[in-house]
Image 1 (cartoon, rainbow over the protein chains, first blue to last red):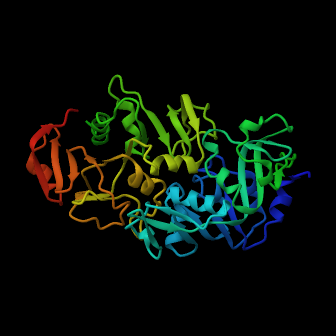
Image 2: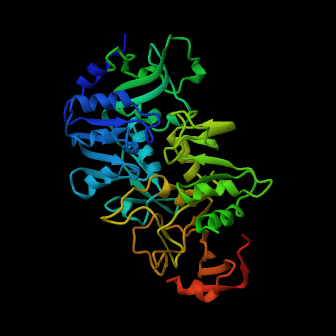
Image 3: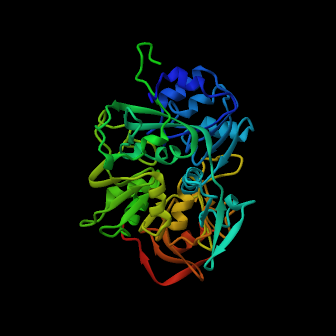
Length: 221
Length: 216
């Protein structure tokens, strides 16, 4: 199956109101072309699951001007003051999770688990309305899985089947998110022939990837 | 000496050769500039690298390699790229020797608040809650007070980062160790009196029998 798709068509698949996971950490390992296209197509009422909203001038912060995000799950929004402003003003719902909990919720969503037990957040406001479960005499918080309609992920290399490698801190949440959505769309720095990535180097196996965003066409989209 | 520089220099004396250390954004990042001779660390950055290196020269950074503040980072020989699951597994699972973080408040129980001021500043906790909960040792590096308001308080008024008692508080005025019995004043900066420290601290302090001058 040929998985190539234009950036425009990839985003056209996403309906208003969809739940999206977007990979990246402060703009590193972030699918920037897909985000720009979400902005251009003015997708609305999105639920976005992403560690942050990027840096002041790039990343998911670009979706804030048009109020495209209805609900945001994130861990740190300090680099993009507009996100905090919209949260405090009640223009966007934001659920802040500890970062280790955030990625484990995504992992459990992708791995068929009913959630994770973590000591992080016990006794803090993060624990409000959550179950505390004792295991071997120690308390843990039950944190529930996150799952999305679409995962928009960034990779270093992607072969024509969809096998992925990541580079340095560009890996971040992409590997977990590639397991945790109904439809996974990858934007790779390099698209390479099958065989270029040795099996031992594959971080995300091709079966997780549904669509590969084609290289930029001359109009830049 | 600049307050932040003296705090960073004092924290640096706590580091041991070969440790895996996570330095928070801002002041804690400065600690790596003042490592004692013979101390080499492995810096963990929670966004996915064990063995983070110095920032590359201007124009040589890679968007695929940033520190926890989103700035271009380097990688030392032997560095390992990891995904966020592994990174926080290292943090919560007892594999991280030391976490150095900034603070807004620390109280008599040694509990830290450093991630939000409700209704005003809500940057989010990022990796902070996992770091304070899971690291083998936690040092809070912060200025002693903020615009005249004490930051070492009887009880935190801001939302806690973790219920775990931190291991050490280093400010430009003093080094304080939270213990079961309360906050123990261990060191005072040169030129500062005990009375000045007490006056700028809302929490009760237990004066160490072996009170020392900060060696920076």
